[in-house]
Length: 429
Image 1 (cartoon, rainbow, N blue to C red):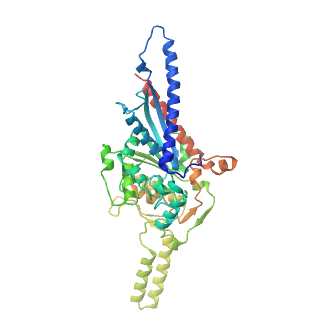
Image 2: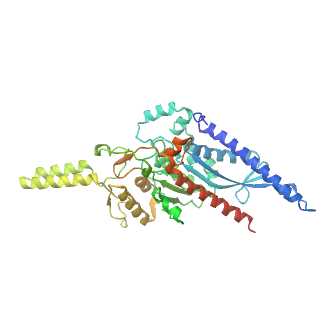
Image 3: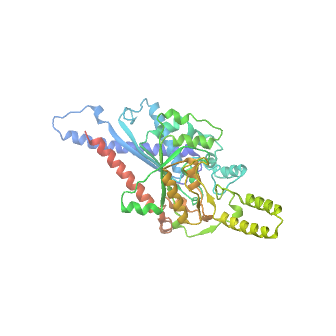
């Protein structure tokens, strides 16, 4: 704690050492337990090789911890290779000369800047300003603002992606609708405005308790892994962020979009003149300048005062409609797309989500357009970063971040269920 400015490599190296310590401690405990069981069976001798133990590991990284975890997993595999060990037929990593068989269960991140912070700040910054902020934040800031090449390597190089693919499940939680100041949804869920990678909607509510999560978890998306890991590295494009987004998506992820606006009472409306800025990213069917140019041309061509009055009334109506902006998500050539809807309230946002769910599958760019920014012209205080993980270090922070507890409780139940299912499968003949 407190050592987060010395770079991703340094933080990842500390984490892998801590992981090895925990893994070896658990392995020793299981080995002693196994020996006691064997000794209790008279005349039953076992070879030393059979004292190898199986350890299952799951990782949950919050914010920068998710980047540390991705780096640490790659280093863990590298250490095993140096030790002369490798993965067995069950994709278990052999550690300590085969004395430990390490199985990878779940890799989960919450509000982690997988694509870095460059071009993903809450308010768009020019590159010189990003560089200045990166220098202020030390070596870690230089990594996150992609002043070094590390994050690009971690997002595209097989050295980092292959170990990540060994996990049975990969999950990324992201704060939607611009409620996370340091880590917006586009980088937390590695969504890109030019990526066509398909995202499939999942419906996983199985109980009344889970159904209550609907007001917090507004979308659960899944990307399917490619049939061959080599395909993850096949696409090379001019945009580094798109390349990173596609390569990560190719591993297969579950992406959970969280909406904490119900827990944030402070909000403000953004003036129309500012909505073209990246603070509110919308795909307009017709810009205000187009409205004005069209009506000015019509007015000039009209010599009748009566016609001019009609045109002015029509202009006023259309400019009011611009406030309730019509946004059409999807390809312009898609004949099956839903009718565009007015977007003025949270209720309209829910209706829009339902229209997307009916599509069943959307592209990465459409997911970014739908969930990265608010669609009703309002901004809530961006305090979701600590809230999503129910951060607690005292009564005040516990109270302020209580909105994230249902989300984290759901994640905990899911991880426990996965571990029980895996353990039962291992015990079955």
